[in-house]
Length: 465
Image 1 (cartoon, rainbow, N blue to C red):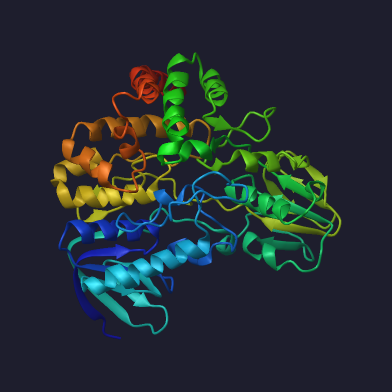
Image 2: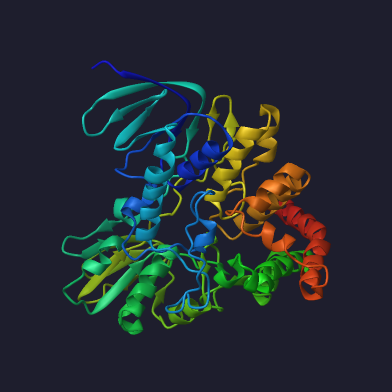
């Protein structure tokens, strides 16, 4: 079959949140033409296959594309996020990206969108429905927006064996359970495991009927400290100031984490267990209270085998609960933790350049692509590593602080950050009035400790090398 020849300035592989945020900034700040290729039937990436009760774990104001609000500017009035900025549901996020594509991107005439297509490399892709092949002449660059691939329960294959007859389901199928079990076993200690436990508790399942296989406990972020609106200034910016002070005054890595916990920067579900994992997950205080109701937490490492009578784990075994449903939450959120340069010749690989914010990072990288010469781009877009372990928090925090320092030296970037809605905190900081002594004191605390905090992080990282 002869390939259809196409031509474009930018070929973006992936119409998930990262690809959409990148394209949005290009459309806003350049006159470029764009081709977007994606294997899903509509934009949104992993949101197309997310579990039905999923929500954002950060305020909606931080998410989406720069040019279009996702948040309605409301605080949640009910539920376990009560009193905090709203968290969009998966359905809302999926509809949002679909609307961005249909109402903003395609009407410009500068975007061509090819859903249900598999990118095969070398500027080529093929329709998954018809087999038709396409060859693209890329005039400027290819953008691999699929690099930070998100693994979700519905498409995840467990890496342990499961005996015949065991009721084992992905998290997506949890709302489909109709035959009432006596017990639920949640396999996985990450954010999806948290979501599964909270959903069961919110829907009336007794805490004693839930067993939670938690290979590693995690340090968690208090969601109240991530709120980007003025009424939460003392919480959000205050937490950043407390973080700098805790790091600067610490005497060891363990002491640093203790100080961060005491300062309200970090939370943990069980204060008697030292966490070894950090994925940047956020949690509300109401959610934390609910999770602490679950007492049957199995800390014997990862599951190796689920048998009819026994569950084998890395550090021991346990009896298989009777009349039980196992819920698979063992998928890692991000399956690719290997960093590479963002800019390499004619290839752009969006990655996080700010902690916890891949979507903001994509918009920022697109702005750098549109604005700065090639020799400056990677200097402005040093990758902030995605975290897995507790010690990874040190690496990402140091990298993020170095990026912030670099950006602060460019007036144009300071202005862009202030005006970009995905940034979150720049406008909050710059809105402080000269007579607001309480807020000025918080900013002074943060700034006065930042240099010592960076030095302490570098010391700890050198000790781990």
